[in-house]
Image (cartoon, rainbow, N blue to C red):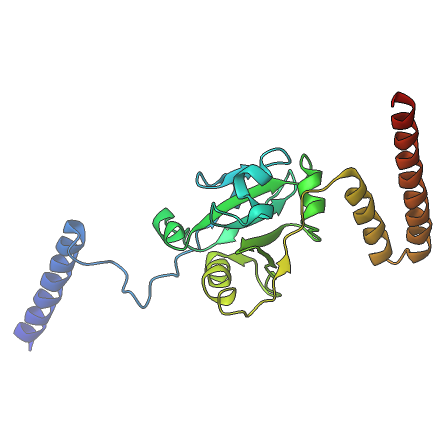
Length: 222
């Protein structure tokens, strides 16, 4: 019996020593795959990615060619405030994957680019829009959780091509008058129909007066 106990203990010591040796050499892992803690999702701020084109009021139309049909590809554009801590979760797509689907990433800070923000009628920030084949598509943020690359890529690569979402005509670049009309629509949408109506009347009167003044000046110079 004494010999048997000695033999068992010797075997245990030998196997323990062997495991320690294998661990130190990296031959086996200290934690099994099933017991390993889940890896945290990769987190990244969209506009910090090197592949993202910084869009602004001056270069937006030149870069995207939105109103001319878009020969530069489809654009997934992120609208955000200056201090934006929103994270996109998941593995960042390779540039080759984006290039294969002809998708370009862009970002616009609304604080310094009000014209683009108003032109695209972005409501609620942060927000993603997708310009694809002459149409504008608005990405709906999931009710639970945050933005994920999986959801964004499915939106661009699958949902939009399969007509899951209904596209809108891409708004034309804004003029002073169209900006004024957009302000009226915004006021009316927010419930201020009365004040919006008053502003609309004064806007029309002002535009008519300006047109009349220009016509009068033109007749004097003729």
